[in-house]
Length: 178
Image 1: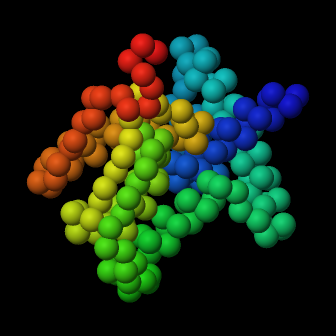
Image 2 (image 1 turned 60 degrees about the vertical axis):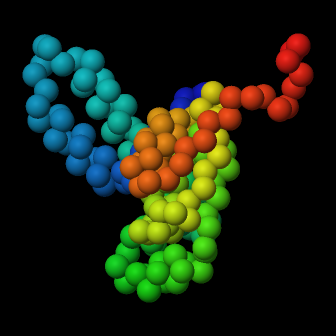
C-alpha cells in the first residue's frame, strides 16, 4: 500500500511541476475518454482510470496542505514562478532584475524546466549576468524533475547570446591513476 501511495504522490509531483493542476488533468481525462473506442483502447482506458484516481489523490493532497497552511518543495517553486509571471508583480520582478548584477547557478545539470523559467525571469534581457556551472554526466536529480537536456539547450542559448561556453576537460579532483 505504501508503495502505491508513494507512486501516486510522485504522479502528483510530476503534474504539479508541469503546472498541471487537478482541474486541468480532469479536463484532459474527460476529453480523452470521449475518444476511446471500446475494443482498441483498453490500455488507454485503464490509464485514464488511473489518472482519474490520481486526480482524487491530487485534490486530497492539496486540501490537506491548504488546511494545514503548508507548502511542499514543488509548491514553493511553482508559486515563485507564478509570482514572477504575474503582470501585477512586474515592478517587483524588475526590482530583482536590477538588484542582482550576476546570477550564478551551480550544478546546472540538476535544474528543472520550472527552475529555469524562474531564472529566466530573474535574468530578463541582461543575459550577460548569467553564469552556470555543471557537468551533464553528474545529473542525479531527475526525481526533482531535473532535465539534463537543459544543460545543452542553455549551452547553445549562451552561444547564441554571444556568451562563452568553457568546457573543462581536465580532472582536478582525483589523480590520473584513479
